[in-house]
Length: 436
Image (tube, rainbow, N blue to C red; front, side, top):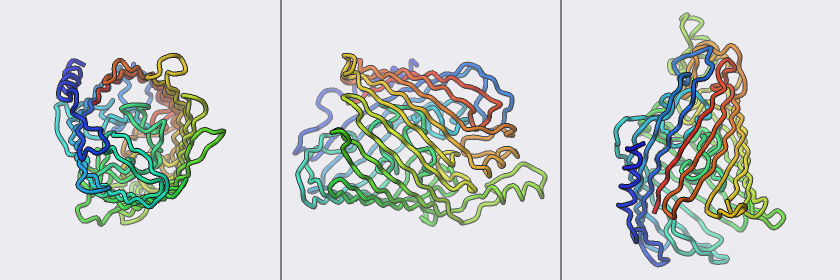
C-alpha cells in the first residue's frame, strides 16, 4: 500500500493544474490517471484444488497502474491518441480461479515491479453527416469539440475492442464503477485481445438518429490467451453491433446487440477428451487445436430509472464446444444491477452500485474440466459437482476531492470456477483513483 500511495502522489504532482487542455478549439490534450486496487479474501472451504484454482488460504494482492493520455487533432475531425501505461502487481492467485474474476484492474500478466507499455495508439476520424450539432466535452481519449447527430466515425490502430463495443453507462470501467470482469463486460463476449486486453484493428460506426451501426475487424493472439498478437492477421475476429437509444418515461436508455465471429487455431473439448482417452492423461485443448470458428451474441441494456438512479443488464451466449480464445471461460452469462449517484442522499459526487452475476459453462466444457482440463482462468483438476458461478458485488465510491476517489467493494462468489465443492469466497476491495 505504501508503494501505491507513492505512485498516486507522483501522478498527482506530475499532473498539476492546467496540464489537460479542455478548450473547444484546443488541438491537443494531456491528462493522467492512476489507480491502486487492493483485494483480500479470507480462507474459504476448498475440497478440490488444481493448477488454475483460487488459493483457499487467506490472501491479499495489489495492482497499480498509471496512464498518460496524449491527444492531438491534426485536421478537422481527426484525433490521434497515445496512451502510455505503467503497471505492476498481481491479481488474486495470479488472476486465476474464478471465471468472473473480481478485479478488472488485474491483467493476465502480473509482475512485482513497474513496467511500461504503449497500450493504445490509434487514429479516430469523425465525418459529420448532418443533423443537430452537439458539444463534446474533453475526456480521456476524447478531444473537446462539436459534432453533428448523424456522423461516421472511423477508428484504427491499437485499442481495446470494448472501447467501442459492448459499452454501458453504468458498468464498464473498473477504475470508476464495478470491478468484476463479468459486470464491466459481458462474460461470454470473447473479444480479441492480447493478455493485457488490447489488439490491433479498426472499426466503423454509423450514427443515424437514435440508431448506431458498428462493424470491426481485429487481430487475435498468435495462440489463445497469449502476450503476442498474430503478426500475419491470419487469425482474426469480426464484430457487428446495433445500438438503439430510446426514452422510457422521459428517461434515456439504450440497448446494444453485439455479435462476434472468431477465426483461429483453437481446441475443441470433444477432440481433447478423445485424445485423453487414448493417452490416459488429462485432456489438453492446446494439443488438438485446428483452424476453426467460435461465435457468440450478447445484449447489453442501460436505462435511467429515476433521478440519479440507473439500471443495467447484460446477457450473452457463445459456442460451447470450443475453448475461449482470449477473455474468460464462460459460455452463457447474465448480469444485472443498479447504480445510484449520491445526489439521492446529499453526496452528489459519490456513487453506489449493486450487481448480480451468473456465469455458466456448457456441458462439453464441464466434461473437459471434470476430466482435469484447464482453461484460461479455471481448472480445479476435477469437477465432481458442477454449478453456475454466482457473484454479487456491491461498491461505494467516495469523492474525497475533485481529483481523488476512494472506493470500497465487496464481492460474494459462489461456486468459483463452476465448482460446488469450493467456496463461497468473500472478496474485499479498496480502490484509490487519481485523475486530472
